[in-house]
Image (cartoon, rainbow, N blue to C red; front, side):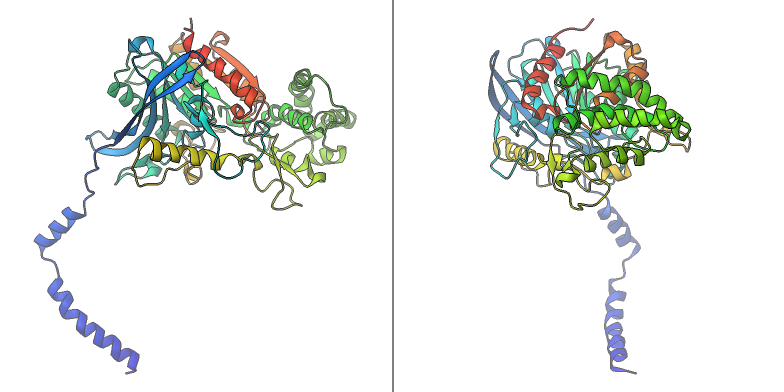
Length: 511
């Protein structure tokens, strides 16, 4: 035998007696299985901090409750911990007279930091209003005198896999990643929260941004139509994802092109790329919108059967409205994709524009590619990450060791479609029927839809189309367009306008 073989035999000879001596008895095996069982979950933690905020209506004294609530299965075993940050006004009097608003962002996979530190909460990250890069720390984190705390208590919810929220073994985060699964989990959290804080008879609102629009519609079903019977006073949809036809491109999806054209025009107007720039910006966008819904839609519908002269007339209009060259538009076959538009608009300057906010610009990783390789409107992430971690850990005293997940990038890749729309022929996801059902079940429910004109993802005109097709009674819907992008409140004039619109919406009873 070789030396290597001899060494192997020697090692085995030395190990075999030890293994035999260490072989477990049946009793030992039972003890091992018992010790391998998941350890009991520790008690959920809550961290409390008193504070005050000076507003235009006077000083508000409030208490921050940053903590966990456990979701449980039918046997009472904890399956997940949901972390939330609640700001509750002190000495607010009768809870039935004090609204409470539950807010969350989208992704899916996003924590609620954006709405909390961009618009609603008592602290605000101040970013360049013109969508310029935010830079490095220290960032401007200032009291927010226009916080919605003026009109309502606020609860910011981080769904499972975001913030400090996690599944508890043997459950996995992925168990909660889906339209149905996520909706049920967040609805159960709301039920638990209003029980813990004795807010069953308070006016209740939900505020959801982006995928939060999908979640909001699902919550209407889970809360109002489920066994909890929790009717809502209002729903605020910020840059909502409602009907996926409006923002997921694909062959034959004409709604996508129609609903994006005015957003392209807004970007071209802002960057001075129009052959003949109009002085009246809003009138210009209204003209483009009307063209998109009539001539442009008809031309798209005809496809390659369109008369050549009609096609050239449409191409000329598209040139006037988007600033893209006639030759480029011909090669698109009238179908303009947002990722390619973001690349093409300022190609001659070596710049691309942002998808979340088309006012932002930057260089691209690949200067000759057909579409953008990254999104320059992600310029705010570092400031919001610093803000939430600094506030929770330094000011409130949260001592949880796990990472605060601002944005979980794994969840969108495995997010499950609704169970009733998972089949081959189910088509694009749309939650507008859930909005209709919620509005019909609760005639006092009002839906406020807020969108930014420079959002190339979930455009204002896509939201309008979705709500028009939803069949929700018109008297229960209000739509607002603002300057700015997907997170339009980062634009300073819009921030002030939105803050007042939201205060009025929450404070004024709806009939």
